[in-house]
Image (cartoon, rainbow, N blue to C red; front, side, top):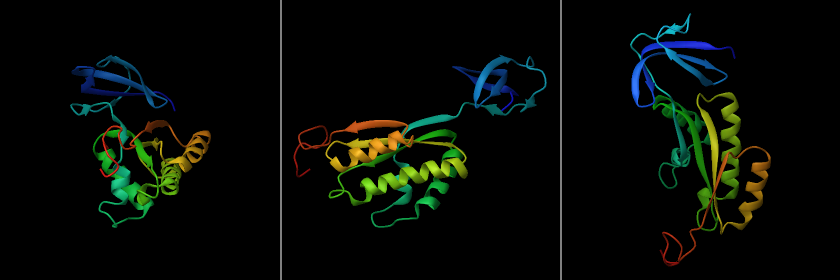
Length: 179
C-alpha cells in the first residue's frame, strides 16, 4: 500500500485536537505533520479524524450468537452483524474473547463450539469483515480436553492472545461448589 495523506482541521493527537496532516501507509500512521505540510492530501475539512479503538476483551460474539438462553443465531450471520455494529462504534480492532470451559457445565461454550467459532471468525476476517477481528482465547484450567485444542489453534496462528482462568471453587468469584 502506498502512502496517503489525510488532512483535517480537527485531528485527535494525544490529548489535544488540532489541525494536522496524517501520513498513513501499510495500515499504520507513519507521521503526523503540521496542517498543510503534507502536500497533496485527502482533505476532510472540519471532520474529526480520530484513531480507532482496540477492544482487547469482549465476549460480544457469544452474546450475538446466543442473545438469550436457547435462542441461537447462525454464527456467520451473527459475526457479520456484530462486525457492522463494532465498525459503527469506532472499533477498528476487536479481540473476541472465546471461552474454553468444561462442556459438562456450559454446553454453549464448550471446546468444539469455541474452536469452530475461532476458525470461522478468522476465515470471515479474511473475506467479508470490515474491522480487524482477532482472537483472545480464554482457557479454564478445569477444561482438560481444551488444552490440546488450544495448543493446536495457537500453532495454526488462529489465536492472538491467551488468558488462563481458574474458577475452581474456593478461588476467585466461586467460594463454594454450589455457587
